[in-house]
Amino acid sequence: MRRPWPVVLNTGAYTAEIFRTALLSLPRGLIEASQACGLSVWSTFRHVKFPLAVRQALPAYSSEVAIIVKESSLASTITVLEITGYAKRLMSETFAIMDIFIITSAFYLMMNVISLTSLKLIERKLSFGK
Image (cartoon, rainbow, N blue to C red; front, side, top):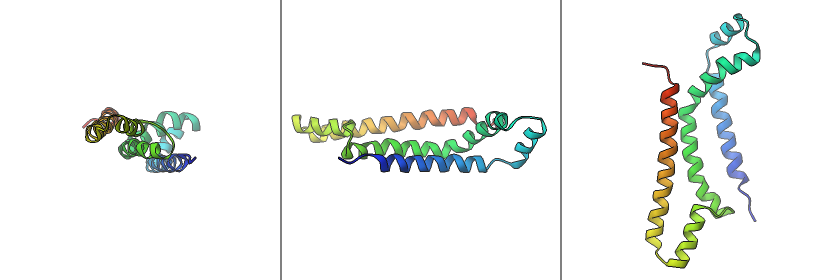
């Protein structure tokens, strides 16, 4: 039985790279200013670096969330019985192949739209006002 570890490792690597580049993109002056104000390394990370890095990483991470939702159907063909697996079982029981494919694709589309809309709202809330 195959495991979904390649999918998990790939997603984890991309997510780590997204947040790493977001942290590296922060202006050096902000970190120096927080240190000049007497903040500790942990306080600098918690109050300065992390909130700004999340704002920087959110657009790229929202794309990664869409990829994760799409790869969950791939994981079903490997090991996990989830939406696509249930759809296959329903197709073998009812023989309504097109109906089930349309419902399944609509469900995946709904999951993507909800997750991407939520991330877009969070991104808009965390962005600096214009």
